Length: 109
Image 1: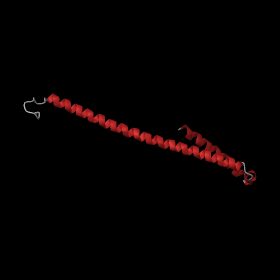
Image 2 (image 1 turned 180 degrees about the vertical axis):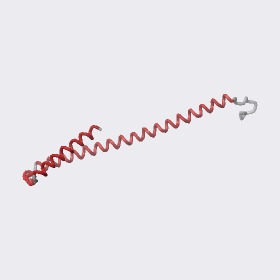
Image 3 (image 1 turned 180 degrees about the horizontal axis):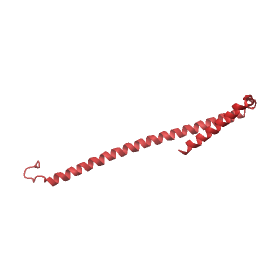
Image 4 (image 1 turned 90 degrees about the vertical axis):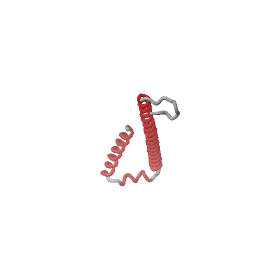
């Protein structure tokens, strides 16, 4: 193989192999850097989604708490629950317990 300028010594097979190795390593490094950036971007998106979901849960719980507090302070609730049959009352207690267990489990993740 000859160099482009006249009178220069041609590249040896060893020089060519060295350049090929450097080119291959550079290509792999660039490919890995691209993959790393993609993973970082994906993780950032996932973390943002998780944060949004957490804020939505907090807002929902705050809303429900305030709604229940205001209802509990009204006159209507004092007699309303007495209209429920005993079986409905027990079922509501059971469902509340199950819901609280599910919320506690979800909070662990």
